Figure 1 (cartoon, rainbow, N blue to C red):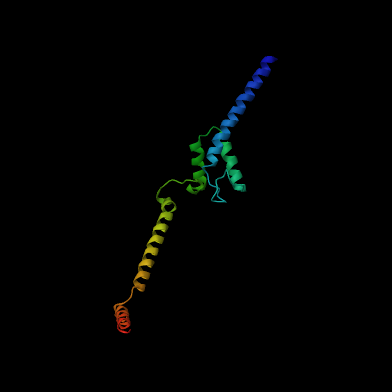
Figure 2: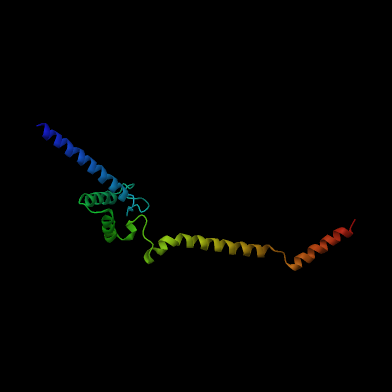
Length: 143
């Protein structure tokens, strides 16, 4: 009887350890996957129904013995690269990776061109300079 109880306790301890390991692996993967409803949150942070379904799918696949990479590959195959919170850099995601930098550069270029144009518009013409000199010369001549 004591052996059975010891075996049962050992099995429970191993099960708890396996569950803790599964929880850690699932939590790490949930941070890598984007909620397709919220789009700016991981499935770990989202309360959307689809995020809940994706969390359950991740746990089920890990419990079946699949590796983290196999689970990620399944999700990408099913939902596309967008499901990854950090999608890979490839030709189909260039705009996603480099678009913000291009928009920033375009904004800086536009700002610089506007500043140059404004500086040219505010520069006095030669005619304005001659009139100003004439006025200053007249002030000097009058006591």
